[in-house]
Length: 277
Image (cartoon, rainbow, N blue to C red; front, top):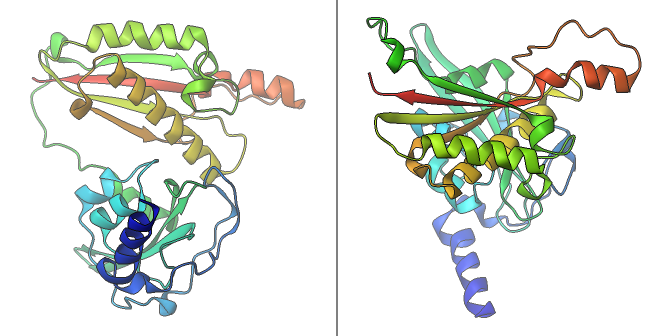
């Protein structure tokens, strides 16, 4: 069985992925943690790309990329990485993407960083403004929905859900599990339910990439629990917004413990249930 697995890995690395033949090439970002977060994110020089022309990515595929995707899944969504980073033992993949605008073509670099199990956990853009490409276009103006068609919103404090700075299912507080079960009970029957968005947020403490990764992991954990409670999986999506949408006050506290307490409202998970009009 081990021989078969080795052979399958060699086939993916050497044939199906083509330019991934340089398996095991070291990463360029520094101090990648077991959880898939780099102490310093470094992008390779664009001229070092193996696929020098880059690609025009499918935006719908890009929006499907999230914490926990495997290398095989990432390959099927985005294609092979564009730099000579390899497959086996490699902790990051880099891409050179182009987007066509009214004024011409914009080029962006995109990076996925993998955890110790080689599942992608954090994602980065250069320049950072390229991340806005993932936002879904605003819908055409439509008549105002009736009150019964307005999205249903549930907000749960992340501190009630998880231990501080944690995001996995085993870190959930009992009160958080109870809240998720209650919300799932209200969303279990599809009816006119169109989509459930699970949105993770953090406070401003820590760096941007860590906060974005933490918020994404929390949202993915809550999404999975809603599915386990009977909410249709195809209707539930997760996204992490880091510290981009704070709701706490100015919070000028000098001592860290007081500042953490003041920023508590920012550490939250929102569940937005959208219904058909």
